[in-house]
Structures are given as structure tokens and as C-alpha cells.
Image (cartoon, rainbow, N blue to C red; front, side):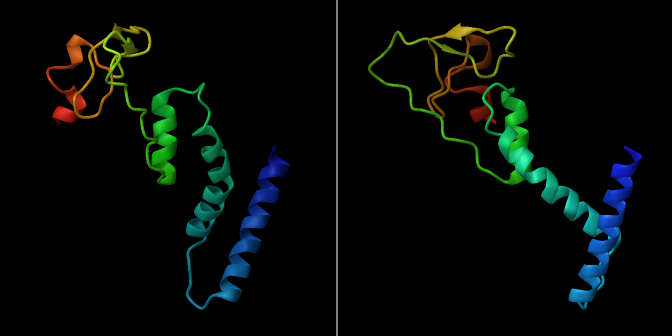
Length: 123
């Protein structure tokens, strides 16, 4: 592990030297190292934001880091009044089923998290 970090440090020093040779403006080494780290992590974060097995919150944070917009939610059909969905506000362990949905965002919400529109749209 020490050898890996030593190689990483040497490559960062070389990157700073190349950057300074190519650019007239000076930049701090820490800034360049942060950019290198971000570029190495970015593909993994993009991949994890698409894995459906991960929690919604984790995927939402990954998309926020990358600046990707939230995917559009499928529209609930009007002609299916008995369609049952899961409350999107309740934690996964409660897993509440409901037939109610928000009039604005069209997401399902249980009685606890909804009046005429869901708690999130109310704010």
C-alpha cells in the first residue's frame, strides 16, 4: 500500500510540473491534486448513480455531485383509480402502500405525508 501511495505522490508531483510548464498562471499543488482525484472518481460516481439496487438517497447524492438532473417520474395513469403505489416519503422499512398521490408531482404519498398535495410540494 505504501508503494501505491508513493507512486501516486510521484505522479501528482509530475502532473504539477507539467501543469506549470504548460500554463503561465501558478496553481497550488493541492488544487491540482483535487482535480486529479475528482477526475479519477467521476466515472465511478457516474456508474453508481445508475445502479438501481442502491438506495434512492445515495443515487440522488451522486447525481447532485455530478450536476445531473433527476430522472423524470413516470406519469400515473388517470384511468386506473385502484392502482396502488408506495409512499415515496416513508422510509423503506415502513413500505406503506397507498392509492393517494400528489396533484402536482403525481408521486404516491400516504395519509401521513399528504393533504391535497404532498409535503415536498407544499414547501
